[in-house]
Image 1 (cartoon, rainbow, N blue to C red):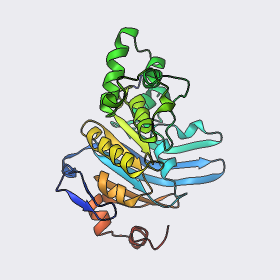
Image 2 (cartoon, one colour):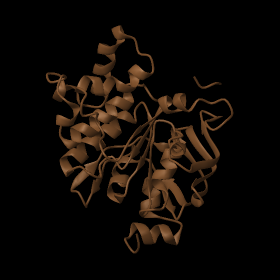
Image 3 (cartoon, rainbow, N blue to C red):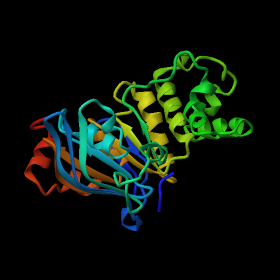
Amino acid sequence: MMFLGGPRREDPAQGREAAPRSAPAQAVEKLRAEGLKAWFGATLALKGISLGMKERRVTAIIGPSGCGKSTFLRCLNRMHEVAAGARAEGRVLLDGVDIYGRGVDPVQVRRRVGMVFQKPNPFPTMSIRDNVLAGAKLNGVRLREEDALFEKALRRAALWEEVKDVLARSGASLSGGQQQRLCSARALALDPEVLLMDEPCSALDPIATARVEELIHELAERLTIVIVTHNMQQAARVSHYTAFLYLGELVEYDETDVLFTKPQNPRTEEYITGRFG
């Protein structure tokens, strides 16, 4: 190959129910890190992480600030190496093929493994329509395909009904929650197989957060999603699996319900109960 639910659960902190989740045991791995190490200059940020992420499931990455969550996420689509002085070792397998292997095009990797960043970053001088199509145009989308493509992407991002009459407006004119979904639409326009989300709700109010979480549930029916979050209630609401990172190491990984109710490692229990972090 070459590169070119279970029952609804109440969240006591937020007073709303989490959406039902499919049975995790039925899923197969879509993405796997093996012995993944990452550096910023001489600083070792990830210390040999091995972790599999299931197809059409949501995997949450939790841990205190500076533990390597975002670095790990950026290694999954080769965004880490873009930073000056950054490098990675180990393997990341996408459908069994190492994305760091010889001859693999990182641009094609990023097309298959899309990313939504912590802070919404619409292009302020572009219209809503052009924001959605920006990445697709760089990847050679033909003019006659554009209308269908951007409408499909906005619908998948649950934004079409809110913006369909104002598509010529600047993307920066939207609310924070709408901007985040606009950036999701931009990533979805490339039709990725995996979507990485780096604390996508950290700057949003509770209403906008709920809408993005609903979007995550909807997208997980078709995509593999890996989300970094500092909010453990959010991890419990949206994910099927959770991985706890600490000081660049994987401490524990399990089904979300198991990890939050019966953690096996004392450090995991201390973190999720608020004793540190």
